[in-house]
Image 1 (spheres, one colour):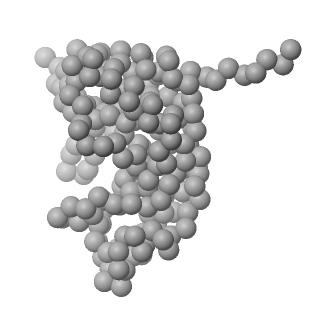
Image 2 (cartoon, rainbow, N blue to C red; image 1 turned 135 degrees about the vertical axis):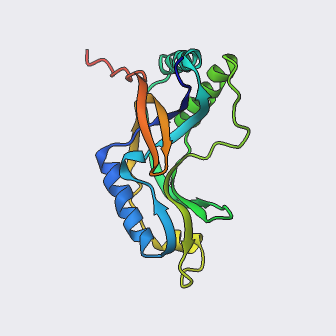
Length: 195
C-alpha cells in the first residue's frame, strides 16, 4: 500500500528571482537576532495547500489543475514588499506578491475546481507571498518589521505565471524538501495577427 503524500499547488520562480530573494535574505540576516533562512530551492508561492492525500486524491487534484490551466492565460504579477506573520516562537518574514486580477482569478478558479471535487478550502484570506525566514526575532536596534521593510529597498521584479505545479513536501529533522509531482502549462496568449 502506497503512503499518502503531503501536497500543495504552487507557482515556481526563475533564477533571477532566486538571486533577488537570496540578496534580500542576506540583508535581513544582518538585522536578526535569530531566524531560520529558507533554502533557495524551497522558494515558491503556494496557491493551495492540500495536505495528506492518497493516490486517488492526487489524481483528482491533477484533474482540477488541468481544468483551471486549460482556461487560464499566462499573466504577469510582481514582487511586492517585505511582510510578516506573527507567531509566539518568532515571526515568519516573507516577500509579498502584488495581488492583481490574473492572480486572484487563478486562485479563485483553483479553489472552485478543488472544492467541486470535495477538497476543503482554507477559510483564511489568500495572502500571496514567498517565505524567506522562519522563527525570526529582530535585533533590539530594529524597532519593527515595518521599519525594516521601509529601509530595505528592493526591485519589484515581474513574475511570469505560466504554469501550475503540484509539489510533495518531504518533512525531516533537516527541514522540508519539495519535490515536483506534476505540472501543467497555462494558456499561451494569442499573438495579434500580422496580416
